[in-house]
Amino acid sequence: MASENQSSRPNVALISGITGQDGSYLAELLLSKGYEVHGIIRRSSSFNTSRIRHLYEDPLAFKQGKSFQLHYGDLTDSTCLVKLIHKIKPSEIYNLGAQSHVKVSFDLSEYTADVDAVGVVRLLDAVRTCGMDKSVRLYQASTSELYGKVVETPQTEATPFYPQSPYGCAKLYAFWICKVYREAYNMHISNGILFNHESPRRGETFVTRKITRCVAKIHLDQMESFELGNLDAKRDWGHAKDYVEAMWKMMQLDEPQDLVISTGEVHSVREFVEASFAEIDRKIVWEGSAESEVGREADTGIVRVRVNPKFYRPAEVEFLQGDCSKAKSLFDWKPKFDFKSLVKDMVQSDIELFRHNPNA
Ligand code: NDP
Ligand code: GDR
Image (cartoon, rainbow, N blue to C red; front, side, top):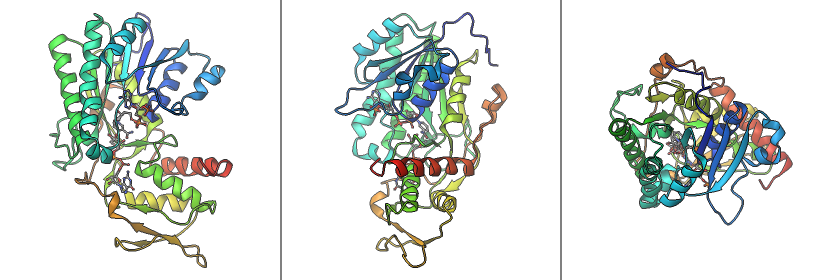
């Protein structure tokens, strides 16, 4: 069970992937709990810190946090990982850094393996090199993409894995190397097998955010059409704010675990589109063929939606539904968002975004 009394352990967290959706919410959560938070950021030719800028520009907003520091680093660079862990001496490491786009992993399969698979063993070895294997707790961002092809539903910790992408394969290696190091070296390493989770901070090329951005622009008359790929894929979508809470709770357990985190509620991409348009009180007609066109019919206000096979994947994950009973038996976790409130949060947030900045 969870031991939430942290008094004997310093609260120093190191987050890889802090500039991403989950990293930004997790940093906020840990700062609000009084952690000293360190994040690894990559060098890029333009700013990549928009999701966490408020944390260093407005420190009073998270005044319970002891401090917030960013460090250049990369999961492909072993030496930097050793140096950072040696310097920071974290009590908890959250490994959220990844090439996280499934479709892109088919184009960048070797790179995805380097970051998402080998990057994890680099991090684990860095912890051992620093002699911190007994003092550090490590969270690995595992994923429902491990299940891939449907073997059984709903998926639990006992469901066999059958990944369907280079991303899924890389994460499978990561999952297993974490288990191997946990058992071989008695390290506190947990795999959170998280099902899809979204938010207004979701990357723009994932399907939910792509939809809510387009719906917001259509609402504001800034766009007339957009295209999607497979509308029939079904996902168990939750809210990232709820899911980072589960990550933290998992890390407070006395024993490391591999745990599914999910809502159990499943919707298709098509249903996500319909729910998003319902938020702006607009009707849609579906045009299923590859040649058909999406566009707003000026006189009726009805939006037509088009499928473009260019968004299909070489292999698809058709159906994901998680059963997180095991996690719920180990700690108290109740998601605050359901499907409807998730969609509302994302659509309303994108309307606000584009109302003030049409080029966002
Ligand atoms: P994002 O794509 O939003 O964020 C990924 C983060 O990883 C970014 O901060 C990115 O940096 C960083 N990153 C990419 N490559 C490297 C690298 N080589 N070295 C260090 N950091 C790197 O992902 P999410 O926040 O959505 O997801 C967080 C983690 O959880 C990922 O590992 C993802 O695979 C996994 N996951 C996500 C789920 C979801 O539904 N969101 C579900 C299950 C698992 P930069 O900003 O510079 O690109
Ligand atoms: P996923 O998320 O692959 O589940 O991985 P994504 O939102 O990319 O796709 C979900 C489903 O929607 C279908 N789809 C489209 N997808 C995208 N991106 N763009 C489209 O235009 C489109 N049209 C239909 C896809 O085919 C797919 O079936 C996410 C990532 O966050 C991973 O890192 C994480 O591990 C898993 O969720 C759990």
